[in-house]
Length: 337
Figure 1 (spheres, rainbow, N blue to C red):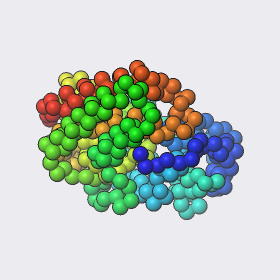
Figure 2: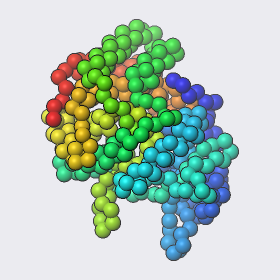
Figure 3: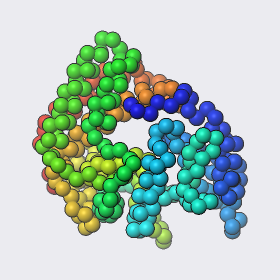
Figure 4: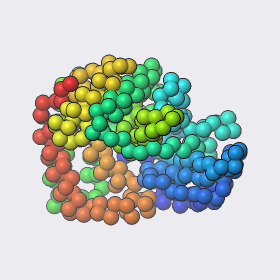
């Protein structure tokens, strides 16, 4: 794991600092501050005064120190701005004082308009087709040029490096270390075979983390349908990365959801069926990366509080079982559409 900032990275991020930092950009905060659910960054909903006197709100996002460089953050901002210009319902940061990225007391931060909405009904084929159309439009824009600063989603960063990091530390119970080492290597071998079967699929700029929590559904007289939020994990990778987290776990459910998504997607972009070999491979990489992510953030007091079961015997037994299931799934026939 590459970003290892000092302990308690947000210790200096006080409510006063948050409010004063946003005030300094020309907005007038009302003192209302609500911490939103986010472990990687710190995200706050702030009340601001509006011209018509009605309550207004913005969302301030303070980036985790040492995770992304300014250049990498600005690449994400530029991509989301391209999407908004193409009338894709993504939520770009506000340009305040002529910039979208700001700094205060050593923290990089951005301010976004608040976007309301509800979780979409992923059991509704029409909803999935609608989401698929916008994924196609996101990827059509994403394919126009590559990222120059942001990394790719690959087997090293999401699989091999996390495994080495975990085994090099004191995270696993002694009696389970060899078992985890063996099954995680089997899983990585299966991932490699899946990528070989898929062949040279195209990498493009992705959202990178399309799941229910990053999709907000709105209804009404204004723009209705899905809104894509939180491009913090945006990077280069195969298009199917933005599909598989929406598919569910049971095969019948996966097939039905995939068919609806691809139907909408192909109104705007071609979907390469070879990428279906990567669905379980990408799931496996996410599982490996997620566990190492928690370990790599353990110096942040929010993580021991949020994941008190991390490191217990039962936790690692469940991770080993999970990986064994993935080893079997990696050799199953891919989904078809």
